[in-house]
Amino acid sequence: MRTRRFWRAAGAVGAFACTFGLGVVQVWGQEEGKIPAVRRFEQSVCPMGDPVPLRACALEQIKTFSPPRTADGKPDLSGYWNGTNAWYEDIEAHPHTWNDSGGPSFIVDPLDGKLPIRPWAAAYVAERHARYIDHNVQCFPSGVPRHLYSGNSHQFIQTPTKFVMLSEESNAYRIVILDGRPPLGRDVTLWQGDSRGRWEGNTLVIETRNQNGRAWIDQKGRFVSDGAVVTERFTMFDRNSLLWEITIDDPLVYTRPFTMAAGLRRNQRPTPELWEEACYEGESSAEDMRGLGLRTTPGLSAKEAQIRKDAYERARSGAAAP
Image 1: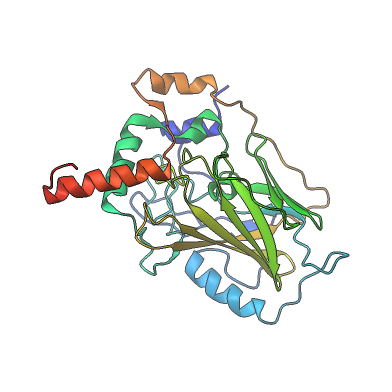
Image 2: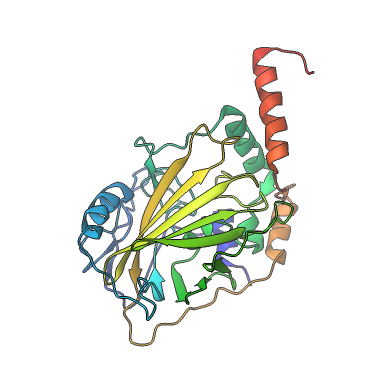
């Protein structure tokens, strides 16, 4: 059975989105070449659409909102949450086309909504997009932060020592350690990385390192190396709405750290559940792409990123190799 991620990659489905029983109004643009707004959730105090106005509104609400709390006094983020996967295809602003849903930029800093990508990395993105298969198509884990915009529905399980994120997407999960234990050594790399969390007031701050450098952050082939540090901030701004902010710091790939933002809305159905999009790692639908000459995406270490960066800059300057 062909997975949804395969059809996204193959461009075999039109733009569609639906959510049942959640009070969602769909506002996807359907005109070719237009950049539509993302879906709008009713009953939220902030417009759960374009990231820039959403973030501005949420940050104001956070100043006075008092979230529900767990027995140990921390904000209670547990439950079922729905987001959007508009940025699965492209984290920058992109128009609706016959095989792309379209949407505004996910990036809130820089303000122009553009990735501050280094020239060598932009060239490498074009190369990998033309030669390799998105790892997500083969049902490998999505990596951080893509894990939370590769499926619409998520469940958060919160204890004093761990914060667990489950997803409807192919058994994907993340375990965030909250008890202050030492992080993994640098020689251990993982698809979802090593995530350590802490509370700063009412905000859960999660820092992720040790990703394996194989994950794309969107379907265009944009990426992070295994040296990237991803910092996420989760803050409730009303009882059923959550601001998710993500800062990526990967100085070999990007000229500066950049920040993205989105909203998550609590699933308020009486008995919510995750509907699993089941598949297995390396699944066979990718064979069609291999038949076209595409191959599984290799990882990129910080060392390899440095070598590619230096080689690109030497070539541009006309300098001889050392």
